[in-house]
Length: 382
Image 1 (cartoon, rainbow, N blue to C red):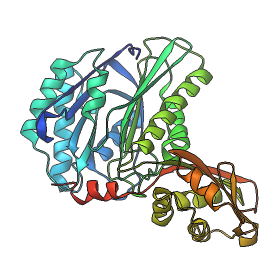
Image 2: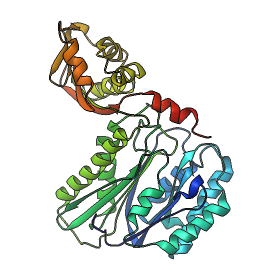
Image 3: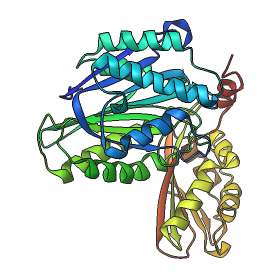
Image 4: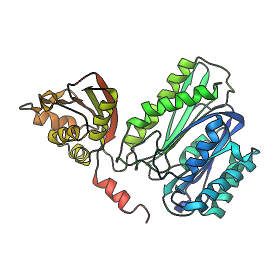
């Protein structure tokens, strides 16, 4: 992975998570840089999201401090004070002003932060900052993830590197659980803000693991400018590549997931209508359990289409699993059960649904729902 000029990174263990795992992450820019963020639309979002969203309104930042293992959500006024204290400590440790530092958190909801350990961890992370510390940073943000999620791309001499965490509570609404992207390209804050919002919608907002939007969803993008100017179209493409790869990795790493399915909906009255249908299919527990069992129970898909809240003519609906036509005219295609089951046994495939009512198209990537998901989440706090 190429280094990104103008940034230093660290990830350390502070005791927030058990077993000596890294749980405090810090990224610091060498100077005030262009920065943008997109945050959860959950109405009970964590105080760290409120703080960071407010500070990024000016389009600039010096860094981000992250705690993993504790969401600092639903922790009342003390949680807001703790988020500010984290930012204050990190800013002081890197020589920035407090308002230049953003905060993110992920983990158990409703538990106060162990602030003595967090503050010691911030000092340790600041002391460990290095241009080569990105792998430690990417590891320190994880919770139930199977491993780090990292991707990079280049654009006209500039480097784009990103990492993300997330395996459960995934149905993003303007962001994903946590994602951090840095580039050494020189861009204006307004451009970065617009592209970040656009690409969040095109990538992270097109995935689902379990249909739940987190209280802590946050996507941050920072640009140091150390590489100078570049072709903005190429940079936009590189940012898309990084965000798309991270988003798809989140689905593949979904809690208990064994299969990834790309749901395409076409023929809808509008793009928004297509999105509603695709999301309804992708988040339906009945559809997702059928995916887990490689059961071509197409009636569940039609039920999801009918529950999406758009006008649809059942006689116009078609369903395909990869190359296998399963439904035509709203009824089953005879003799395809075995072929459909074979497709559904693949680790990845496409489910294509047409509702025959217009030109609207949408895509959502989802995974199956297995016993593994229940095992993880039934004992998440123990």
